[in-house]
Length: 208
Image 1 (cartoon, rainbow, N blue to C red):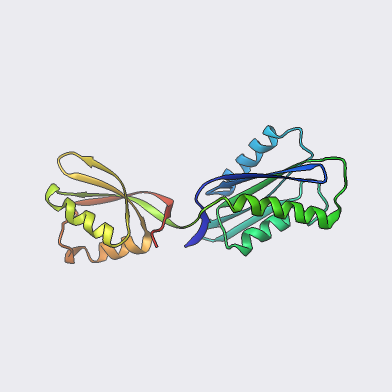
Image 2 (cartoon, rainbow, N blue to C red; image 1 turned 135 degrees about the vertical axis):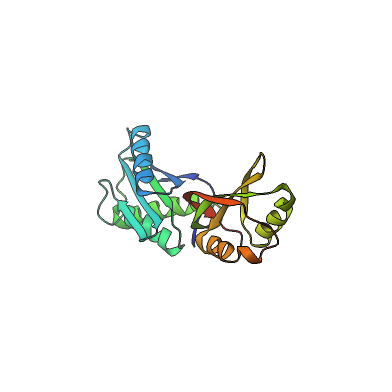
């Protein structure tokens, strides 16, 4: 389980005529982060710097990366990453674009500016909890549908779709632990699982 952002965000500040634009994105992989960084570099091609920091949750652990993009070492990407770490946030990419205003800020001024615009953008965002889970399709009879739904509601398992054919197929988001618990105890349930299929791994929202 980890904390992340509920939506993307943007903020701007002016510091001694330099404009700092922070764009914050929810991401799910290093590759996705790299693609967004390429897009921002293209969008703000005329800026002096496009500095970034990101943190991505994986089964092997947290991947952290940052870049000062030509700013003095340790004045941009590292402070932004430290803010993510201090707030215990993962699956977040911060890119701060700087349009140089002609006045040097010094290392301390740069650290403050990159930090301030990052914090300003994060203040607009709701923090949510996610986990690496599964999208699973369950098949049950029509007579067992309400019992299944009640079980999922009680266990805080999110239903994301239904298919109504000869039987009902219910698409859910579930953690691996909760799926194991469900399958291990299926003989003790008050409904019958005709079939189930794991569709894919995905990051899922947690109801706390």
